[in-house]
Image (tube, rainbow, N blue to C red; front, side):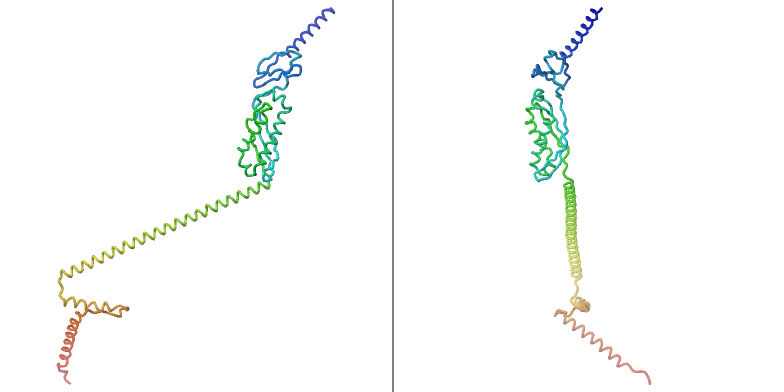
Length: 309
């Protein structure tokens, strides 16, 4: 009985040993992972994703496995001084991929800490050569410069820097207030310029309209004068034509001229009136005729008898 118990115990011990050996021999590496195998404390090989057999008690698989996927690390805000001595706070986001598990394991003790410190120092060097305004407006350039420098520095660590982004750039509160005032003043200045340009354009258009109106008015007056003069000339031509067609006698013309003299002398501004010499004889004949007529009337009045007493 005692022998059977001992045999059972030995069998169970052998089963446990076999299970332990199998558990140390068989290793499964998941997809997008890599395993570092050490034999007797030294690097042996790198395990790709899949099933692998190790030598028990000689081979050791390091934990944790190396992640080959793109990793994202968000760093805490870091104070950085610009070229114009302004302290700003910058948050960075770091994207990288492990390309060599051996270097990522043995070349640096703490990969994430090393990447963070390298990013901070590189960021300070890049921002230190820029002013505040350049820092706020040149994020793409800063990201490109950081990626180039970090990619070169981290190559020996077995990682590739995919990109690095400035998550936030926060100037001091006083600088933010000054920038807001500056932008408000700039907006007011642009508004004033636009208003002045609008007034100027309005005045120009108004002056242009007035000029065109005066030109059109002057052209209208000129056309009216031309038409009026042409009408008067045509009336004069027709009048003279009618007179010539009627063939008036000199006595009739003289009589018409004498009738027109009172109207010519009717104006208050007329101080001198010219009378043609050929009209003097006709005027004398008319005056003599008038005098004779007046003398005849007086004689007839004298010869008539008066009333009886």
